[in-house]
Length: 478
Image (cartoon, rainbow, N blue to C red):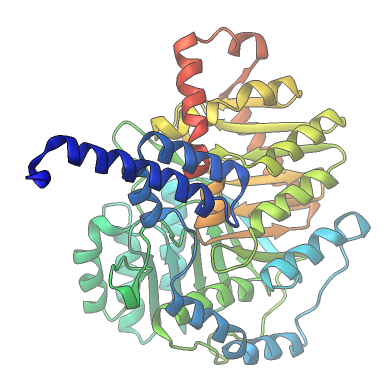
């Protein structure tokens, strides 16, 4: 029979592969960057069925309809919060001067959150000390504790946080925790019941579902790190709630910023919006958004980003800041997989006389990402960009400084995943004092770096060059 003839099935397979290739040449480039389209088409050309399966699973950075409908309701739902904050006598929008005015306007139009004056910022780099400080702030909470973290697990490092949440809930403090369903998957089944037994309200963010009416992709993640206590104290930055040595052979180094002042309510707004999207519960009372107290002099604004927004907010602001830089730019990131606009902005700044520094770890925590990252080094060095390879530990901090005037600290990496697929938050700080303190931290890191030179880099083996270039071809998919 024809259906038992191997030649018949071979022809079906051959024709189907070419049908996939031709069809995806039309589908893939639609509303996609050329780099991402080339990456997907390369995979589909060599492995049509595998590429098709991967594309259907993770190839379209589009939110499911049910979540998009919730997002359209968000501005109306949160309108009362916006009105109350705008009318508060302690809320004011300082003028940061003409050099930064366009960045302030751009950040507000992208993320919807205004610049707020009267803040105090404390930079924290001691990993265990950050967890201890957060636990101490939770122990002093009077009204509520809100935690939103990509990774939150139950281990020796987070025991103090969990115990503090239990004590806070026992004395009547409303404790709410959001944790990402993929980032925290290893302890979801034990941590969530444990926290709920302590009286803490816990919700998974973006749980992976394959039901057609409740579909959620596993690669669209909430990567934010936010803590808010009583609407008065806020934390954000790069550190998750997990032991620094959670990956064998790697010790993570982080940077967090502890904030007091009106901009804490920006972080609260981001938390409240995510809480609503996951639970449909609206947090809008005076206990959640209290009248802010002035705590310092630093102007700041939060910039949320992710697939919930029509544009790549972080990427656009960073590119704009690079084009506006006049003296020096320092970018620190654990993962550097730039898109074309970011790469061009960095190179243009350097070629235009700006002193551009990129600080990354010498050894990564993902070999394939590291190879793709390394493929960009040669052209960066040729443009005059200084590349510092951090040797002490794995530098997971995410921040940048522009001239002596502005700093950006938060959860976003300088890669396509953070720009397009992950929900992120960055805190934009327009204060020379904070920038000076960040510069001191950058100098500390430089002391543990080796400065890569173009001559040295060109001496790497041919095999490594090939591996890096192959990884780069697929970097838009990372």
